[in-house]
Length: 338
Ligand SMILES: Nc1ncnc2c1ncn2[C@@H]1O[C@H](COP(=O)(O)OP(=O)(O)OP(=O)(O)O)[C@@H](O)[C@H]1O
Image 1 (cartoon, rainbow, N blue to C red):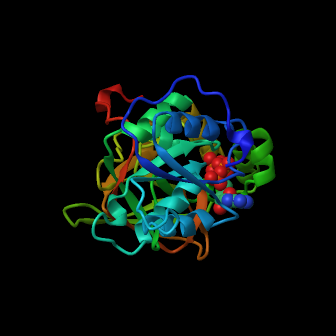
Image 2 (image 1 turned 30 degrees about the vertical axis):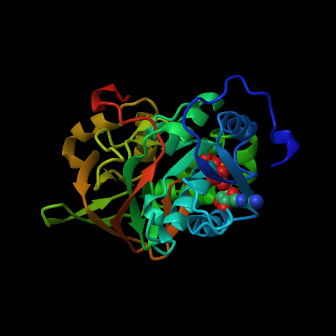
């Protein structure tokens, strides 16, 4: 760890020490870069044994997570937790590497808890898990939280933890300029959304859902988000009843096509009125339905975004994946989540 990361600590951690391996993306985030240094210092002051490895480029976090799960980065001793330090993209890579690692017995990579130091633009998973934002509180969570079991989804073999999307949002994710994102943060997504809407050809997608009872249904939509959690793009609510602790998907169908409808959906999302579009007349509104498997067809090769990065291309088959454990505060009652 560079000396620049050694910053003053306000409060030491009083929870039991853990052996933690942190996989850190040095290019993630802009304003929150100092956070990792403060968290590491707080952990060490609390007695935790902390090792940090830095990623060197795309997919490196995934490779490192696979190595970490076998103890290869910590002198053969398997860490008590593997911590992803970065944005949602880095977390997604770590989850993919961790769950793809060969099973060890014990403890088995699926049982090694994942910790998070959220440094990104949206930090949707951290919001969904209700992670604290301060360094001392975050360190306390990493060192002492009872792991919670959550469920990822899989799209054409690739895992996602929060959501996968097809249509406008996937094109926005693919089109957003990383340099602009670094400079202006979330505003880059707003600009790219407007640019995409201006030239949006309004393709239709065929969404085939299978529910837990095995009923198969076919739908048509202008865009579709397959949600694991209830937040989207930060703290906007897309699937009000979705919770990571449950196995299935909440499939959000944006039924109305065209530019005006796309603008309307965007405005409804950011003002918290999206769920009310279910009442739109003529059935061309917004619907959320449960599913355990989803297939989406449309223009072949169209992007599929997962946790804010392109993770697959159409046609795509999604299924629920094995559960894994994450270091986070206990689940709050549904009624207390925004
Ligand atoms: N050392 C590195 N140099 C360049 N790119 C890297 C490096 N390590 C990881 N990456 C890539 O950086 C990209 C962005 O990472 P991440 O999504 O975590 O951060 P972010 O873009 O700042 O956050 P957010 O996704 O919340 O906007 C990922 O696609 C990842 O593959």
